[in-house]
Amino acid sequence: MPTLEQQELLVQANNLVLDQITPRAVVNAWGKPPLYHSEFSYFFVMPDFSVIPRSRVATGEAPRGWKAGVHAGEGVYFAYPDRGWLLVFLDDRLVYKEELKAEDLHALAKSWAYQDRFKTRLDEVYTP
Image (tube, rainbow, N blue to C red; front, side, top):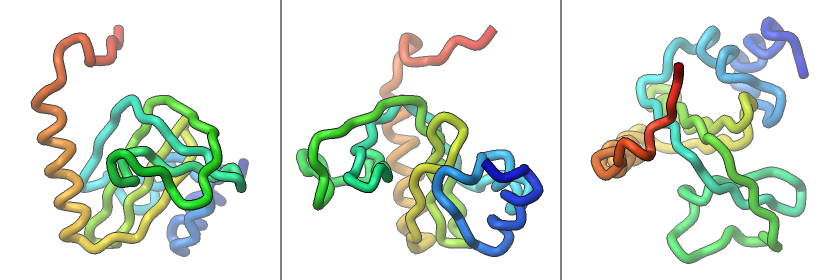
């Protein structure tokens, strides 16, 4: 894993290398994300060991080329509409990136807000 300074340089150069960048490096380089979401997520594990969040695939579908691997954990989603990036972190590492138009990122954030309306207190993560 590169040092934090090296990660920040990668982010500043728009070189978003999977599994090599932490959320801290992105925040240090680009500032806090305008749109943020965190939830327990399922990820399709692809043959090249990259992952795709289930939420980025149509309901009932699987990504092209997917065989059978699935990983789950707390997914952290950063959306930067001004830069056109959706970044997803799992276990404090960048695991997924997608270039999207600003309007698509705002629509995604609206869907997050809609989903959050239906969370119960049981869904909340306990932090002491």
